[in-house]
Structure formats: C-alpha cells, structure tokens
Picture (cartoon, rainbow, N blue to C red):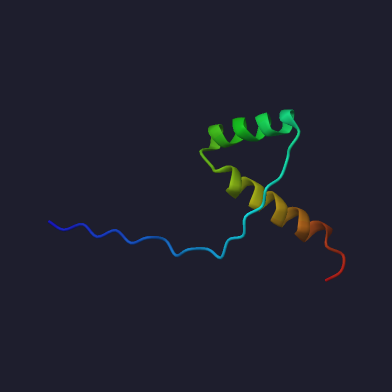
Length: 58
C-alpha cells in the first residue's frame, strides 16, 4: 500500500518580531495551549479582525 501525502500550499509570509508585555504573552501561551492553535494563527486572526473593525480609510 502506498500512502501519498500532499503538502499544504505555502503562504506568502513575512517575518515580524515584536515585544509583548509578559502577562499578555503568558495569556497568549495559555490560550494557544488550550485551543491547540499556534501563536501565529491567533495573532493573525486578531490583527485581521482589528484592521477590519478599525480601518476607516477604505
């Protein structure tokens, strides 16, 4: 039996380094552990929502 797995298409990513308040970082880590999501996915979703709700120039 041959099993073929296909890789996900790669996203067009850019790196971003930030500093977070220690308490906020710990809360993010707890949330990610609890939901089994990556920090990147949680932050991307939060940023998308923030920009959608606060971008008055569109």
